[in-house]
Image 1: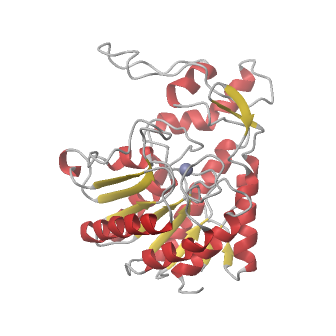
Image 2: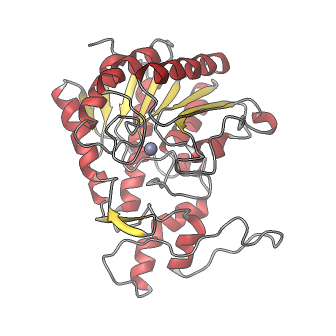
Image 3: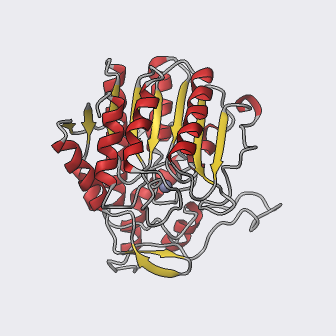
Length: 349
Ligand SMILES: [Zn+2]
């Protein structure tokens, strides 16, 4: 399989994130992508660099003002007296209730104020290399999609940073640009088909859902830890099915703690049946390995061996696949998990 990868992801690295009120060692580290790359290289996949797609596909999905913030945040922070190598993390957030009944807030001018204006959590720091890495991750995703439009059955984009928590006008959850949503939008325009997005990261892809929630032309199906107990907490309930013309084009399947291979596979089959019935074009897969039984920040019980079955089942839809990396934080298993999943797609053991 063609595997698209950019070394620029390494420029996005920081020691700590803020979790539950304290600094903890970062989970979303460059080693994740390096381990996957090593496993796929050893497995004989062809590794390709991305081509630059420019800003237009990003602006098709995200608020250009947020894109501008991400581009200038670090240099403005330095120029404004930040003058530190510490990552930017917001300390004030534009909570929905803050301006309830008061209309729209203008974007602040202070770098710290702008950070809280666009970002929704403390787990998504900005460092000097964040914007370049996030742009490269989009290029990785779109290059993978171009291979599929050119006739490949399945391609894999080793995106880092991930993307599915980034919404039209807010970012968070280790995500800056929504690689999968940008790709689905681009694929829809390139192929004239209805695109399906299968999100099998452990967390609900709130950003992807938000971007397409009112639209009938892109169908979104997600399996994830129940938001009543799991980040990002405020979306992904089973009764969220889209709105307006998008009513019925969103499918959410929250999963209980400890969900193992058999139950996960059954849920995956339901999601695929739903997607195949609602779409007629390629599938974009938001692939996370944080469903793994040993993932340090999640609570499902999927085994490494089962990921081959997942890949086989998804390939069994017969749809062209653009498979994009999202989360997964168990460094001991992440490479082998990716090898199995893609091997399953190719019908290999
Ligand atoms: Zn995740």
